[in-house]
View 1 (cartoon, rainbow, N blue to C red):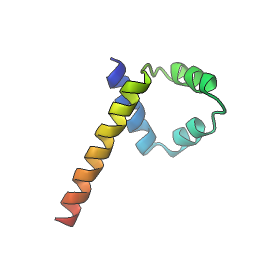
View 2: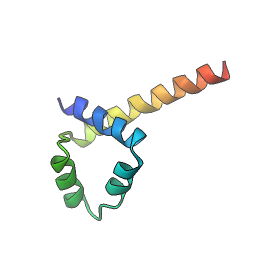
View 3: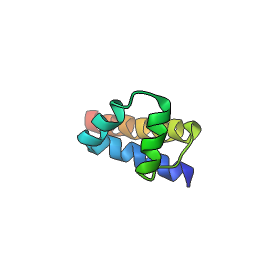
View 4: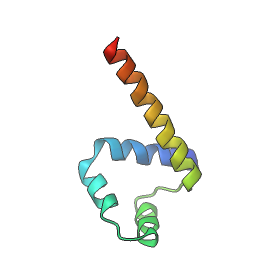
Length: 68
């Protein structure tokens, strides 16, 4: 569940500009964790890194196809 939550978070960050602005305006880790829980995201740092790595791999694959 934690990895799936991190993947959903990364997906939201990719497509939702206002969400990115809210997340990036958080002043400290405690506030960020509170906001994530409020938004129903439940993941740890390891899962976030894995979800981000998967996202980067997906983007790399798309770039290769575009260069085709």
